[in-house]
Length: 446
Image (cartoon, rainbow, N blue to C red; front, side, top):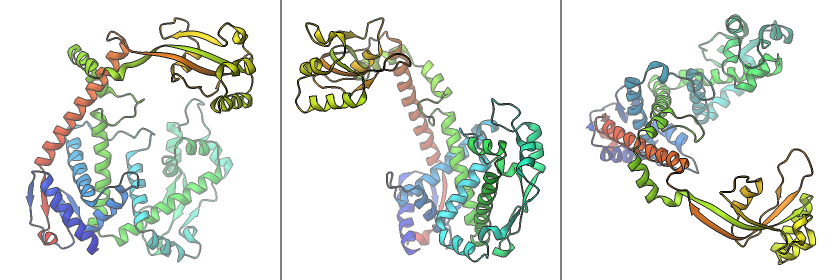
C-alpha cells in the first residue's frame, strides 16, 4: 500500500500539472485519494486498474493509469450528455448486451486481483462450486430440444416465443450460504445463460447440447461467486467505483464510435464516410502532392518464369537458385512450360498495370523486387492441372497513380477526414480536461 500511495502522489501531482482544471485539495478522508463528480477513487482502486491497463507490449505508468480513468470519466459524461440513448446503449460489435459485457469485465478484473482469496473461498467448500447450486434434473436433452430447436436455419437466434419460454424455464437453484455469501440471484433461467453466449454457444444450446449448458451454468455460478465475494469484502465505495470506471470505458467507446474514431479498417464507419465527403478538392490535391509516395504503384515488370508441377520440386528449385544456380539454367533444367525453349527462355515479357486482360501472374509479378527470385506460387484455378510458378523480375518500373484516379480521391479524402476527426477529438478532450472539477487529498501529497 505504501508503494502505491507514493506512486499515487506522483500521479496526482502530474495530473494536476497536466491539465488546467479546477483542482481543490479538500479531501480529508484518508481512504480517498481523488474524486471527480460521482467518481470516488481509493488507492486500491487505482492500483487495480493500473495492473489491468498495464501490458508488456503496452506498458503504462501509474500517472497514465490515473489519467486514463479521469479522461474516460470526462468523455463518458460528455457521451451521456450528447448521444441519443439508443446510440449510448447499443450492443457491441459481437452482439453482447452492455450489462453482460460490464458484468463480465468486472468479474474478470476482480477475479484477477483477488484470485488467492477467491480460490481459498472455493476450496473450503466440500464440493467446490457444486456446493452452491443444483441443476434442474427436469432439463433433459429432449426437453432442451423441444424448447430451443432453431425454427429458421438462416439465423442462430432464439425466436420471441423461445425467448419468453427460456425466461420462465428454471435450470438451476442457487444457495451461496455454504460460502457465507449472498447471491443476488436465487435461480438461473435458461435465458440467463443463453443471452451470455457467443454464436457457437447459442448454436450448442439450439442443438440441445446438455453438457455445454451444464458447463455454462457452472461457469455462471463461478462468476456470481466472484461478484458476491466482492460485494461482501470490498467497500461499497470501491465496488461502485469499479463498476463506474468500466461503464465509463464502455460509454467512451460509444462516443469514439460516433465520432468515427473507433472502428476497424474494414468496418462501416458512417462518421468517417460523411466527413470524407466534405473534404474539398483543394485539400485532396494538396494531400496528393505532399504525400505522393503513398500512391506509388508498379507500372510494369519484365519477368521470366519457371513452371513445375509440384510443391516439393518448386521448393527445391528455389533453394538451388538461392544457392547459386543461374535462373536461365534453372528454366532449361526444370520448367515444363513451352517457353523454356524460347529465344529468351521463360520470358513473359513486360507485364503492365495497364494490361486489360491481367492474369494472376500480374499480381504476383507486381509484388517482386527486381533481381530476386520469388517464392513458389500455386496456380489458383479450381479445375485443370495445378502448377507452381517461380518468377524472376529482371526490371521493374514504378510510378504513381494519377491524381484523377478514383483511388487517390478515396484514400486521400479518408486520410484527411481521419486527421480532422482526431483533431476535433483532441480539442474536445482539452476542453473537458480544462473544465474538470477535481478534488484531491492533500495529505497524500505530503
